[in-house]
Amino acid sequence: MSGAGKKAVGLPSGGVGEWISTAYRFATDRNDFRRNLLVNLGLFAAGVWVARNLSDFDLMSPQPIT
Image 1 (tube, rainbow, N blue to C red):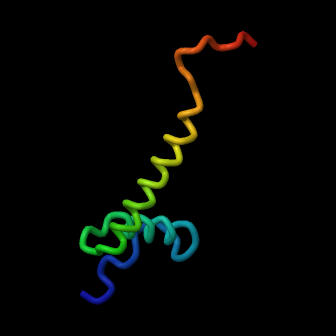
Image 2 (image 1 turned 135 degrees about the vertical axis):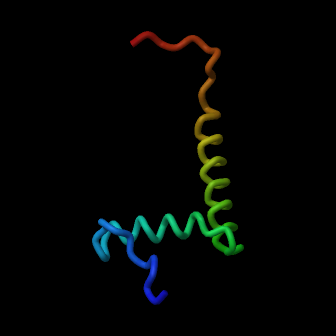
């Protein structure tokens, strides 16, 4: 069982393929509390940023004709 599942077939070792694989494992590891906390705080911060930036639009006001 040594080395089983370490490399994905078809992805180059190193570079972008390894980065994507590492990011996927980082985001989907359900047993690591610190990683889940970091991912959840990041998603929350992204949601707050989007909500604050989209709150400037008044969707009911007439839009200028360009």
